[in-house]
Image (cartoon, rainbow, N blue to C red):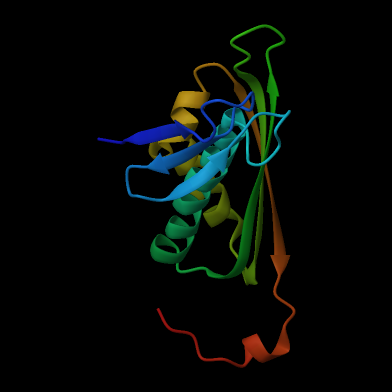
Length: 152
């Protein structure tokens, strides 16, 4: 079971800032655009999607395909419907993988598995949004890393 809790920080004020606490005990502020002291809840959905697919893809690349990834990031941009509930209707996901001799087919398969099988956040967002996914592979250029022994 996944749990979460939010608590209003100033009960008598006009602000709508909350302290969010995850079921695993991690806390952070959430806010709206007016207060701007933390992410908006809808932004957390985009962060959750980026994180979910990133964990899947890096795990598949390292464990299944034994790719030597030295850096990796995922960017998510989402468009929302104009009227409430303003769900995502289009999502652009871009993966940037840096490493040594990264196999393009392994990257494509890892992304496909994440989007079609493993990423629970993506499965939920795909109920309302069309995904457009791109990726880029960059060769590692750092000389001192190249000379380091690799461990599996």
